[in-house]
Structures are given as C-alpha cells and as structure tokens.
Length: 528
Ligand code: NAD
Image 1 (cartoon, rainbow, N blue to C red):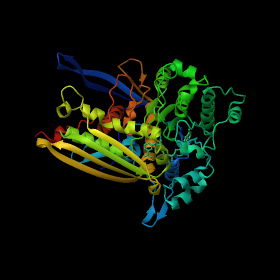
Image 2 (tube, rainbow, N blue to C red):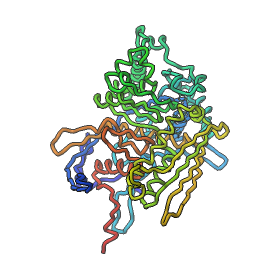
Image 3 (tube, rainbow, N blue to C red):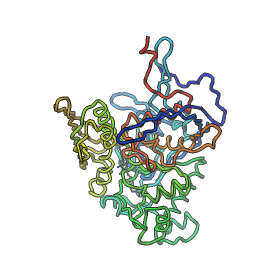
Image 4 (cartoon, rainbow, N blue to C red):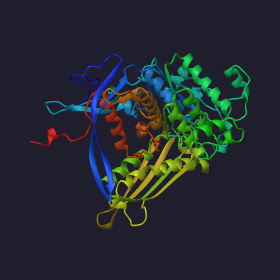
C-alpha cells in the first residue's frame, strides 16, 4: 500500500526545521597480531534539515547536449503536464528513473500484516521538480543552438512531444562557455561557436579583462551564475558538468596538487593550460559557494580543487553518472560475491552513435571512461578474501571495457556483458546480458536526482546533543548511488555496491524523518 505522506507519532517539527534524535550504532575494529577486536559503539546524535526548500536553478554545463536537452524537455513536459501521442497510444509525462520522484521507502507493517510504503521524496523536504516556481534549468554550451534545435539533434524524445515542447524551448539558448580542444576529441571542434571571448568578458564584467592565464574565465563564469540567479529570482543554484568527457588533466606538482598552486596557476599563461574547462567551472562554483557536481568521468576534481572546496566548505560531488552498464555491474558483482560466487572474468562491450560516443571514439577521452568503469568492482572484490585470497598477490577478476562509435544506433546504446564466475567444485557459470536503452533517458532523471540531493545535503546538519550544528562533509559521498566513480573525503573507503549506496542515503534520511533505520530484520514476522 502506498501513502503520499506520513507523520511519526510523538514527533513535532518546528516550521523552520525537521529535527530528530537517533542513536548511531557502529563498531570500531582494532587489529592485534592479525586478530580483529571489534568494539560496538553507540552515539546519541541529532539531525535536522531546514523545512524551506529553496527556489533552485540547476545550471548544466553541456546544456545543449543529449542529456541537457532531454532533461529540459522531460522536465517541462512534467511541469506543464504535456501529454503526447504515439502509435501505441497517448503518453503522459513521468519521472521514471528518478529515485527521489519514483521510488518508495517502507514505513512499516499494519496490524493486518500489510506493508505500507511512502514516496522516497516524503522523507525530507526536497525541492519539487514538478513545480516551475521551485525548480528550473539553465546553463552553458559551446554550441549556440537553441534548446529546441538541440533536442531535435539529440533525437531522443518522441517527435510529437518535441513539437509540443517547441514554444517552451526555442527561446532558450545556452550561455557561452569555455572551450579548449586539447581536452576533448578533435571531432568536437565544429560544435564550438558559442565560446567566451574577451569581448563577451568585457560585457559581462563591465571592464577590459586581462586574458593572461585562465582566471578571467572563472570571473566570467561567476558573473554568469550571478546573472542567472538574479534574473530568475533564484534562492540557490547547483552547477553540474554534463558536457563532453575530457581527457584526464595531468596532476603536476607546482600546478594543481594544492589549493595555493591551483590559484597561482590560474594566473600563469603556461601552467593554466593544464587546468581543464571543467575544473574552471568547479573553481567558480566553489568561489560562489554553489554546489558543483561532475557527471563525466574525467578528473575535474584534482587535489587542488578538492582542497579549495573543503576549506571553503563548498559542496562538490561526482564523478560520472552511474546509469546503465555500470549500475548493473555494481548490482550483479555485489550479488555474486555476497552469494559466495567468484566472478573471474568480466567483459563489457558498448556501442553507441550519439555525440558522446563520437567524443569517446578518441583514445584520451575513452581512457577517462575506461578508468571510471573499471574501478567499480574493486571494493566488492576486496570485501571477500575467502574467494580471492592468493598468497603473495592481490587477485582480481580479468576485466575489460570496450566502447565503439556506431552512428546508426544514435542515442540507443547497446551494452553487452559477459560475467564468468567460479562456482562449487571449480564449476563455471557464465551470465550474458544485452542491454538496449536510450542513454539520455537513463541519465536525465539521475542528473535531476543529483541536483535535488546536492541541494538537500546543503541543508542537512548533524550534532551531538547540545553541541554545535555541523554540515555534512563538502565532498558529498552521500550521492555515491548516482556515481560510477564516487568521490569520497580523504581516508574514506569507496563503496560501489548499489544496494549499500541506496541504503546509506535512505537511512540517513529516515533518521531525519524520525523513522528507524531499515535493518530488514522483521523479527515480528519471524518469532512466535
Ligand atoms: P553530448 O555530446 O550530447 O552533450 C555534451 C554537450 O557538451 C554538447 O552539446 C557539447 O557541445 C557540450 N560541450 C562540450 N564542451 C563544452 C564546454 N567546455 N562547455 C560547455 N559545453 C560543452 O553528450 P551527452 O550524451 O549529453 O553526455 C554528456 C556527458 O555525460 C558525457 O561526458 C558522457 O560521458 C556523460 N555521461 C553520460 C551518460 C548517459 O547515460 N547518457 C552516463 C554517464 C556519463
């Protein structure tokens, strides 16, 4: 049974905050001569979130791409309740694929033995994407197509819907952006007709600019953000990179390994060439105290950027949307290893024909993707030395990732996976998957969720009883569920398994709502 909203008996929230006390049960482990001593720990904590969901603008870098135009079209269709016809009937808009908007949490069981569920979004006051007065999109693209033309080129949404969306989208044009062909594939150069120039910078900043280095780009981006916020009467903005995958930026001592190096390099003609456009957006967001999320695989969040964000207490997150093949991998490998089965060989092939695929056909950009896709099984494998222990060396499954550009399939990406595992008595088990899906229809709701979560996490605070309220860590590993290669604070293990990532986010929000964490013990059904 589904209910829209719920209240927790005996809990009264103020109009300003939703606040709850809870006990955090955990363990501390100490290794003594190869033996683990586990000490259960118990901490009383208070958690709260402000009740006011601010009017939020999500600014996408790469707004005019397949993901950006699909999200804008889908969002406007939902906000204006636009239905459209197809040969299989009339379609109504939805947010399927959004964990926040379309998944549920279990509240408990009635006396009659029926489970009662509520929408995930009812746990805390999220910004409501269906309400145009609360959530809107904008952003940058190096291509000057209006958003209707961009949606047409992306060829993702049904044409009948595109026609209905035309009046809403053809007057929206992305803002000029920073472009450096050295970071993306050569085949992207033709798109770049909407880039920030010295003249544009003068117009935005009201004075001549010194174009040595790349600091001036950061200043222009900041001015663009402020203008967008002001013109749309927004209380908050979130910036998210969904532009082309860049190659990895080299990590060079003296250039970008610390905040001080990074800020000095921005003004240096030579050193600043190593600072990727995506990092310039991250720096601008940090300086404006705006949440920044990297949805592509490259290392936008170089050490200097992370140090800068942490010191400024400005929220950052990423990397790379976990939308299709990798999402499946982080479920299937978790299932196999947690069942005591040993994956020994994972082969993953993809082909796609959209502009993302064209960009990834270049080796340096493919390498960024290969890295984020490859690491996803590491922690799952490391969790089970019964399966993988081999004296003297670390054993891992053989794992290869291939991506090919085949124009004909467009956005309808094919992912083919073969998982071979060792089972009982050295038997072998091979699972083969074939996944066909419009890539951008998977990514768009994830982009929205990342923005809604990123905004919400900025309002979440925790404290020990009567202590000072503290914000969550600026490196938002709480959004790992959405990321192929989750960014985590220093000295923090990376969790890739999808069920664990979801449980983390759900349980934190259950605590805010005043619900117990979901243990799945259900003793009431198991004990006489
Ligand atoms: P796309 O090529 O259709 O869109 C990217 C857009 O970015 C283009 O419009 C391009 O003009 C623009 N662009 C390039 N450099 C820019 C810059 N410096 N500033 C502003 N705009 C710039 O690609 P897409 O399919 O929308 O994917 C976008 C990104 O998301 C890619 O990096 C892709 O790897 C990543 N991603 C996508 C998925 C998915 O399922 N769709 C999953 C994971 C990651």
